[in-house]
Image (cartoon, rainbow, N blue to C red; front, side, top):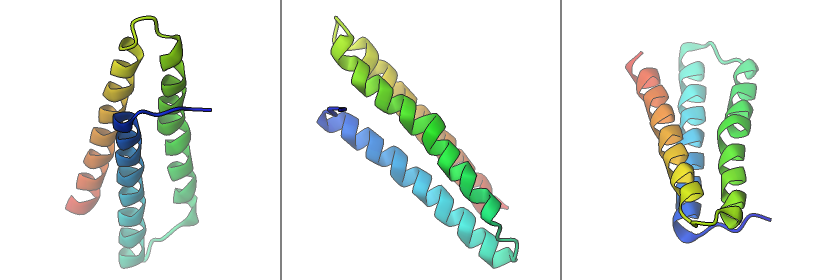
Amino acid sequence: MVALSGWMLTTLLVVLIVMGLNLLIGLYKGIATGSLSIAKMPNFLLGILHYVAPLLILAQLTTLDPTGILVMIGYYVGGIAVVLKYLGDIKNKLVK
């Protein structure tokens, strides 16, 4: 069981919201251009597997960290990196 603190939960929710926005914008663009393909759905699921699951693993490892802050720094840096990656993807989709 993963116990998330307030800021860790907020970080995870922001990551999931940005991932969802990326998916919705991709679906809208696909419908608008007539090139909607169900083959894009595994990319969303792979994003959860590649980005959210490691964050949850880091959240679980916070109990093993003797300093109490090193793993949390990694968690927040990872969360910010994922948000920036998806914001860049959203920007690229909106510019096209």
